[in-house]
Image (cartoon, rainbow, N blue to C red; front, side, top):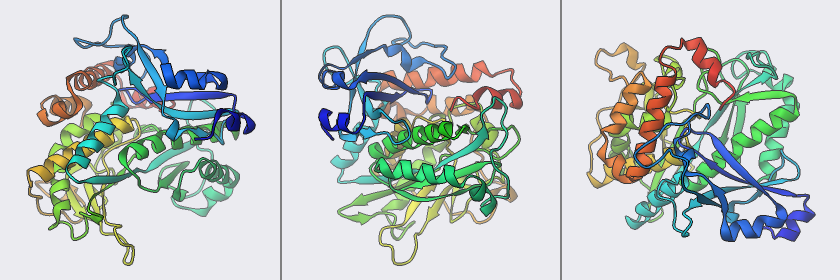
Length: 431
């Protein structure tokens, strides 16, 4: 991390302390550069009530959370501090939350990811993960009007937004984010960027930073970026597919999949997938996206390079050692990436510990199979599955687990009588 003097010489005057709440919203506090060292040592005050905030800034409650009492300390992780290319004069650092006594806050989402990484390490395991980022580029107005024309994956879109896409790449590169590819996607005005896989905590940090950067670059071009699961009801939406591999003694467990130990890890994820939806598809809008025959992964099954199953095994390109991985397709970018990646690691470890068998793969579109198992089709059903999952309760801890249940149930109730168009409009520019 550059020192305060170096940051000042690079034009930094303020530092953003960032964390993601249970609803998936990036909440922040900022300090002037002169107060950074104080913030590192003592933290910045932040209420624990944000653990039960909803996406519209209303609140719910649990037995322990939701009142006006108490305070936490938000401390920046300087190992991840980045000078922001898309927001001149600012640096950004993900932050962890601590009690007033200096102990890690039991419901801190970033701390949960760290605990699951440590749990894996105790078993001699490490994970490499990455979250694909899809977003729709619109004009700067409340309704969505695509900022470019042309077909999916078409050159027309890149021609029309060439300067914009270039500036996204430049900003990410200057911030040290390793981009593997950027391309126009299927839906109107939609693009996708893929980031190099890293450890789960780093991948979650990267996901927050990438989205913040895209939003900032969009604003500077007079555009708006939407990462919502659906931007327009009835259309293909934005996913947040997760790529995951597990490693032991330098070997990728997904090499030789499914007969290898990677099969146990995948089976653990598959078994807990209905419950994991409450973490990875956490809004009513998520279920407007999660429909069959749109490559959203609406079925609880797996296949080799099958884009309609929730789990897609990617064998990797010949000659790239260790490239094999599992893609989980049913999640979107309303998810808190720390909760999501931590929960996926917990589910994979559960499958490995129990040597859970993997069912037979599926080929083609599961819609055409009479007994293909659908994932939950509503947020209510996903929360019911989550609330009954004792493995996830143990992994998250009761305080954080109950916060997830409370926030999801409150979000479902908030949109109980809304039609799809109202849901899409309400969340279009929130995420």
